[in-house]
Amino acid sequence: MRRSLKLSAAVAATLALSAVPVFASVSGAGQGAALSSHFAVSHIPATTTPIKHVVVIFGENVSFDHYFGTYPNATNPAGEPPFYAAPGTPSVNGLTPSLLSNNPNGVNPQRLGPSQAMTGDMDHGYSAEQKAFDNGLMDNFVNATGHGDKTVMDYYDGNTVTALWNYAQHFAMSDESFGTTMGPSSPGAINLISGQTHGAIAFSGNSTTPNPTALKPGDKGYPTWALNQNGTLFSDVDPYFDKASKGTTIEMTGKNIGDLLNAKGITWGWFEGGFANPTAQHKNVGGKEVTDYIPHHEPFQFYASTSNPNHLPPSSVTMIGKTDQANHQYDMTNFWQAVNAGNMPAVSFLKAPGYQDAHAGYSDPLDEQQFVVDTINKLEQSPDWSSTAVIINYDDSDGWYDHVMSPIINGSNDPAQDVLGMVNGKYAGNATIMGGYQDRMGYGPRLPLMVISPYSKRNYVANTVSDQSSILRFIEDNWNLGRIGDGSYDAIAGSLMNMFDFSHGPSNTKLFLNPSTGEPMPQVTPFMVSGQTYMSIYDIAQMADFGFTQSKHDLQFVYNNQIVTVPFHGNTIQVNGQDVKLDANMVGRDGQLCLPIASFAHVLGASVSQSSSYGVTWIPPQN
Image (cartoon, rainbow, N blue to C red; front, side, top):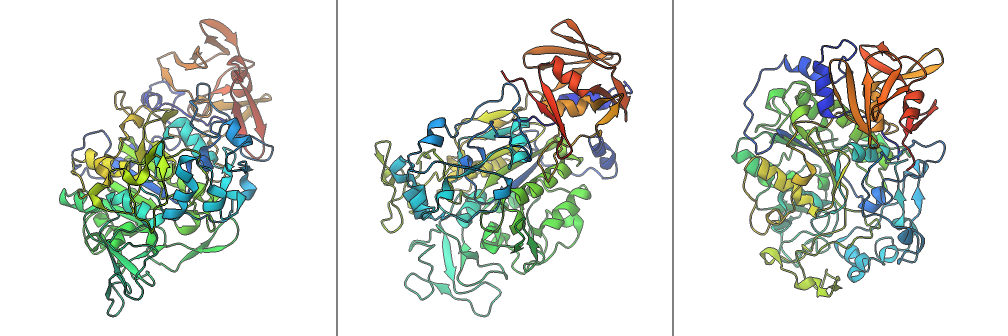
């Protein structure tokens, strides 16, 4: 796969501070210090790690195999954004040759390209997903969640979900992370913030409508399709405390992470596209108008303590993240107001507007990429980036095929909803039922999870089990908040700590990508001198995925097990102690050292390709 322009954070810091004039900071990299001088230093609550800001980008409806099944090997056909893996890229538990050519579902997974970004929506119900698992055989997806649609088996690769693959190369991801429970969006979102889908009460309307009444089992309108008789939610229903909600609604009782953060006086917020105007719409890449705001995707609106039923705006920018009339529930525009004012909350949950949230049927990976890349590019230019962790996760799998059977660590044996039987010689319904609450069987399907931060490990794949409530637990532990209690999954959630490296400071570097293609964006535009294309060493390092250290006279890095030393002038570099001449001299441009890219790649055993569509692409050695 293709390697994007990357530098190690340690390198970026070293270079930004260097007295050598040919190494000015990368465009945007030095903006943080300049911006921070305009903001007064405010009290920052103590944390157990160097992370002072957590930003959760919570997408919709993607299984791990659907996005990363063939990682890190992309097909790279002509006319699509290329991706080539860096040397030493770890493999994932993905689609093996056997699964691609002789799949037990009777239908082989097929690759989807960028022109196939729009697909139909699959069944991702609580029971349907269990049926697809077929007692651990993972062979009933076409029937159970596809309802005969063979597309349910298909996947994208790094030529479509290009940005996510580039982020995976540069930062950390997990190939053993799961939905907390089976089922669709509302349970997934509620599990993210509380790990607990029990404690639900049904109402005949939302809290802003005249005389809504509480519904009991047996009452007309009671949502038996989503709520069991004992108050456990297992499907999608709109939240009670939201003026945009329609039909039967749900109130959740109990605590969520917002309550714990409020108790400690820590700033936080949920920011969702369309919250300020729930009727606003945008077109997706397929040209369809999609409503931005989707009430059942907003989990805090289910709780009286953390809701903003009338979608009131914050009383001021300085109050974003604090308790006022908005009560921590905001429009996406409010997040950027806070960031630009140097007032980013300690904990922020970001929900893209509908057309960009990745939900099949009305959204897609290309629109999602635009949102994710725009968000991360901007955050990397924030003065708070050095202490920020962005976590990308999803609410459910949409029913897309994934070949990994999840570990069942919480059982349920409700004959009306649970159909998963024997798994690995054990009856799934006999697993411990936390709190005694039925219809919370988990873990659910495998989902992507990524950590993007100066503190995340580089080009790392975590193989330890985690779930949506692992994000909840990380926040709880980082700010010493305690647990939700009452059978919440946070008590048993796997840790995300192995995706971080806190022993070397903020040593992973920024990665700026093109929102349209997902490819790295050079911070110095490549240029020609005497027929040679030149690029800055920053951009080469980012693209080829190496970090370097700098002395007064040269810089040094390791690439493909070769020790490389580059002086700040001339046309000779050293590879494993041997002098090697480039085809042309190194030059300075915009305060940065620039090298003839084709010649430089050649001496490292790599190559480059150039096109008008995608610029310069680094192609690693084919070992």
